[in-house]
Image 1 (cartoon, rainbow, N blue to C red):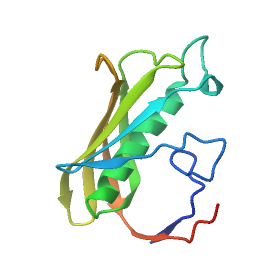
Image 2 (cartoon, rainbow, N blue to C red):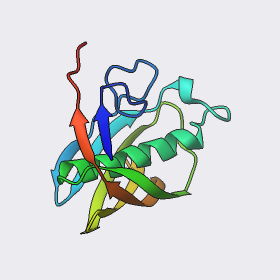
Image 3 (spheres, rainbow, N blue to C red):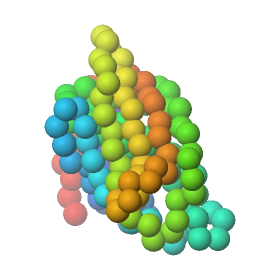
Length: 140
């Protein structure tokens, strides 16, 4: 299987004006980190972000952690635990970490926490299936 990145991903694509445009950076030890302030357009209940957006953040975190250690893949399983509501306008730190690689499977964990007080919003474990990844020429 081969997948192509063209900059339009809803979670991380810088060319997708409707998406989150998350930007993950490698932080060492198989970890990737992004900071994000949740805009009002992702509201669920009044004042809270939709849980699907939080799950998307976790899915992006596991994918980028795998990418940064040289094992890009597609998510085969993502198990999410939502710990508390994510407030609109809250700035969060999103962290993914590769725990293990076995053949073509990449085992990753992730969490979303408040960037100031480190209170946990959600966490996840995931299994990714390693795939050949092609980055297409991205024009702005």
